[in-house]
Figure 1 (spheres, rainbow, N blue to C red):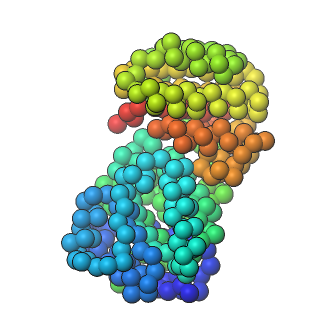
Figure 2: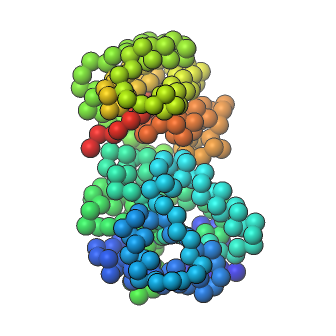
Length: 319
């Protein structure tokens, strides 16, 4: 049985919390969490250290609330989805009629990598809809950029406010419509220079050898291997599902490695490709899903010349 604002609702009840002070955040989240505890529902906090500390201080010694590191959960969007789905399955298997979660994307996710977190916020409306989940996603309006807040309004069906108010979002676009919107792949600052690798129609093994030879990063051996696997998967996708020519270019510094794979095709048919494991071959989605697990940033869409581009980054991101 579901309780609170989600009573009588089926599936995922997804809300944004916009706050401009600690007091506003607590005014929404404290009653939300205490309501879950009172109802005997699994109640989870996935916030950064500062906001988790605010809640601990405000709530005191309350049993029934699980705290997990928001930074660890929100390392990569596809991994976050996989982790939360596992958590939700376990709670449902234990008989939970509703699960409550308050979470927040780390501040660094609101900058150069927001594009894949915006896709995450849209995709989870479908990814979690098999579970009796009521979650709130917290956004600090003092520090969140205006374009990010605009995407938040378009990816969250409703918002929660102090005083127990829950409002539909008039800007909500729907998950599939948001994910199908054409997006321009913006260049990384490294791309202003000449690439250290520039290949046309490379086989995956050829791409791997060239990237190894040109690597200048301080990546660990395991991280570099993960990145090479991701690039190999994307090259294979372009060769098998895209249109020639396929062009691979790489820029590498000590801080990070950026690889773009471009072809003349239309990209994956599945709007959830990269984020949900259901996006698999024969449509080329499995390679993108693996890349989302293994890279520090993946973005894809149209390049400025009209080609379909996948950009993969390993290492420290710009900004």
